[in-house]
Length: 125
Image (cartoon, rainbow, N blue to C red; front, top):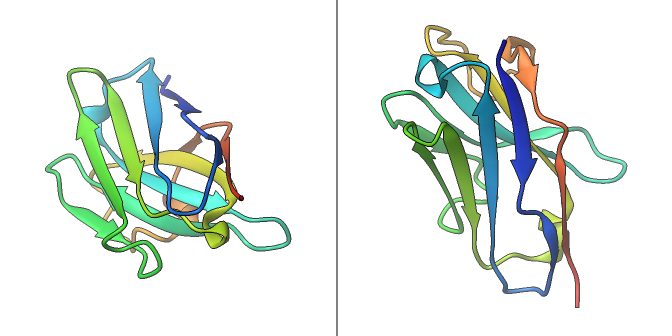
């Protein structure tokens, strides 16, 4: 059974960078598309980025040109490189998996059957 574990969160100053990792176990990631989501205090969880098994990617408008999603199937891991962070990026970040055959909008959270526990990202001076 697929399990996901996020890591790499922390406290960073505005303008700084972090790289989040989403490590999978129990199954190989190449059968799944992976999404990154985040939830800020008092706000709904929102989609950040997505990558499918072929490397196709999508980004929320708020993170385009600052965040880069990638995957290393050999390591069974998906990464989210976050640059030029600002306080509005403060949130708990989650990765989630859905079967690669699902074609619904990548932001539809109902289609993701496996979620990690989340990692906190705090952007503050």
